[in-house]
Length: 164
Image (cartoon, rainbow, N blue to C red; front, side, top):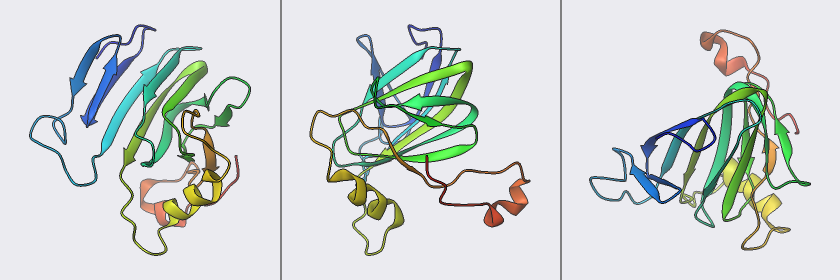
């Protein structure tokens, strides 16, 4: 899907509506719904471009920047998510992303929580959700997995838990 700001979006799971056009992914979009109602988007934005999309309130969500970096959240409350970092989003209705000066490519993933005891993402979301209200714009609650410049084979040795 071409975005109005010159970027593009690939819908892998769920659906994305932009300017009256809806694109459904092959997972949870065309063949029926999965119990977790997943959304999986691959987004590319040119330098300085902005992207916003609705999120289902109560779903767990995170962003992973794999090229460039971005500001996540509403103006005045946005937090920077650096290159090769993942950030868990706080609860809210619309996610807003602004590309840095070099542009950004990122994955946006969201789904119903599994409600399993001790779930790390749920614990982080619960910790930060207390201050958020319905209608709020999600921002990065915590960067949970910044990936250093190591090979994929060493992924399990990556540094974890850096604050944004």
